Amino acid sequence: MADDLLSKYSDEDVAEFMEDFPEFLRVSSEIDRYYGNSEYQIEGYVSEFEVILADFNRKYKGIVLKLKKKVDSAELKVFVKENSLKDFFANSASRIKGLSSIGLKNFGEIEVSNTVKFAAMIDQIINSLFISYSDVDYGTSNVAAFLAKNGIIEIIIDPRHSSQNSADFRIAAFYALSTGVDRKINIHSKLSSFGFFNVLNEIEKREWLEKFSPRFME
Image (tube, rainbow, N blue to C red; front, side, top):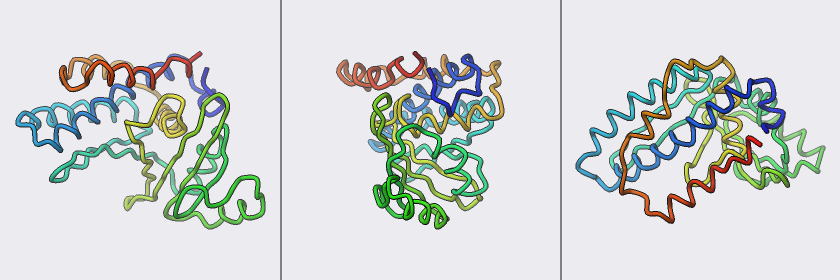
């Protein structure tokens, strides 16, 4: 069952995102790996992936995904629509269970238990924010967020460490669902048949599936 952050959304919309986004992260991770290894077929994969990325942005208009291509990488960038990092913290990040500390330059600078210093640091939030969580039900996770040049907020999501239980994943869901879901756009089946048939060995596949366990929706 979703925590309070997602409680205002329908179970159907939450389930739809929880199906689409993990697969999107998986494929983006493999795109990045292929790109870094200069695989000969990568340009075709990238072109196809960017079409699906555009579909994703139309389906979930509260979130913006971009693929930043460099010489040796193709990194997925995740942006959410907030006017400031203070608004981002107040409207989403602060509502995640298990908030333990925040920082302006690194994780763990001020513990939430230090109420005076914690409140003072919130007032100082401008360009960057590092948030840590520790919860019995959801485990430990971190969120790094930055004010982007175009005035929206970038959140860092590492496909290797993000899961349905992690704070970054739930924050992404909160914004993605904020303007509704266009169910006519099919994302999951396109990604599932995308390729990379031999990229993950059986151990890696099992580890990936275990990360995205169904416990979050129970």
